[in-house]
Image (cartoon, rainbow, N blue to C red; front, side, top):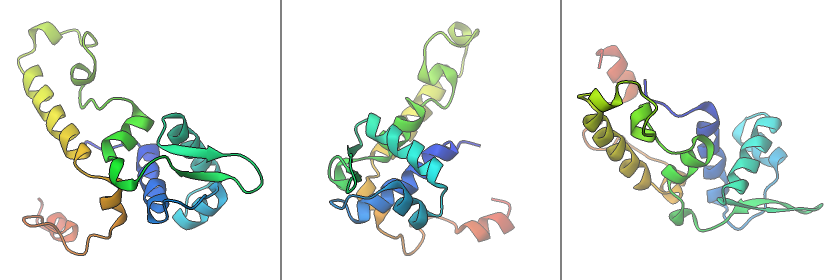
Length: 152
């Protein structure tokens, strides 16, 4: 199963909340209440996102966090990379030399192709798009419940 870590998932939830009011300073406690996540988890994610330049941190009694740029200028690829590092579906797709059979592998090129496709897909979805509710499944998609019952 290809899936982001829980922290990367939480980062998307937190960033989406911030994107709905991009100019408003928000603190960890408020974001935790809004997202139903634990305050320590929200604090940890906020600090990492700020360290990676996706958020601005303002200290003081009336401080908090806000997006460093417009939601349309932040991609899902950037958010996930801020928490997990560069995208790599396999070791060889992310870093050269980490796999013992890399030089003799006959599927490495295909993994690199798949990795690039996923990277481009994540780069194509902005935080602004994530902040908008998706009313219906995209064309050609099978709703999750139906897919589960049909073994898809």
